[in-house]
Image (cartoon, rainbow, N blue to C red):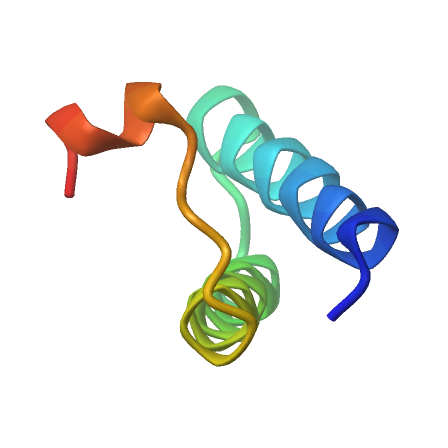
Length: 59
């Protein structure tokens, strides 16, 4: 997956997560967030992209 696609997915995930925290997102928003996170995970594994160092605390 091209880096630009990964960046777009990260931006989308951040936007949806922020909405979930600040605005009490609905089930559809949370489902979309889950799908974006799964797609990011697959992209990282498939393309052997290494997660940013700040992710290592979470992963």
